[in-house]
Image 1 (cartoon, rainbow, N blue to C red):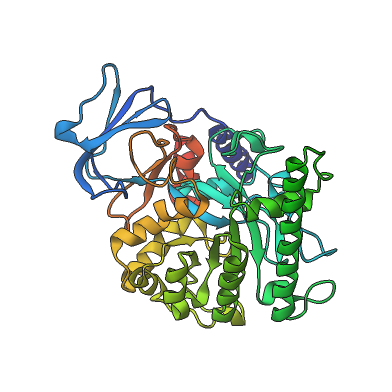
Image 2: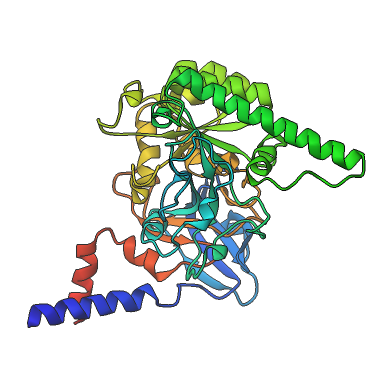
Length: 428
């Protein structure tokens, strides 16, 4: 009886906190005396961040950065501030993509499938992640359109989290593509690597023809061709309006991506990029971004056997713009900082490792004007850490999104369920 009563009280208390109001501080708000890593510039040892109406309005040394009249002031002595982290590759929320009827499904939109109430989003925010690129899987050569999300509090619908203003006609993310083992499969899928590339090239040729028909109709003042959802999405890629997030592991698969991108004139982001260290100079010369899924334990599939733990350092030295991702649930979003730390341990500079978790990820999504660094005019997305970013003792204390920190993030950042339960036990 007592056990049942305890569990009931615990669940009730958790539910109350899950839906409790956020930890918002009245605007404007000033956060003083922290060590701040703006990413866009050098660290500020004793710094101040000023936030108003969900935006950053000032950042600088505490001695020279004044508080606006009537601002709330929070002393963060001994704490560290970084930008909210950007995960360029996540599967949180159960996004579905294309089905087994065809290997190429450009018309499919993940935003029509994402569950905004998935607890995975709160795990991500508890780890300091504020922006996500949620993608369909890699079982297709083109599995569908990804969705960029800002993890704001109290969602009721996917529209509450989108970066785009028009989810019906707008471009709300990238396109997910893949090559290699996952997307080969059996008929109607390609069956071989060479056939995979041929099918992709054929689709882009059809996309070029669709664009030409539209242009000719406009020039002749005629009605445009009938609307074609597949070709619309492909045309967006070819016109440079929609990016491609390209799942690829092996060096030869990476080079195939570079060739197709050069042929059709689009800029992909290499997702996973396990063998990127083998062709780092070629990637750098092409100006292609690599978003690395840093697997830190054995297992997985044959394609990842070539992983080099020094991949971050090698790509940095070659001049590749590199970010990290979780591929959640392959890696745990709550441990995102750890993947930067492991790369520092293996020779990457701390500055570039921090950038790979923040601003570089924002560049990979084309969102660098809003997120990824702490600069006036950008969204007030930031993380309060207990200590040095890559120390094994450091914890995420708070995650702020547009000037607000929700209570669920504070709960989860405690560390584990047992510690949460013990707090409620003491309260009861």
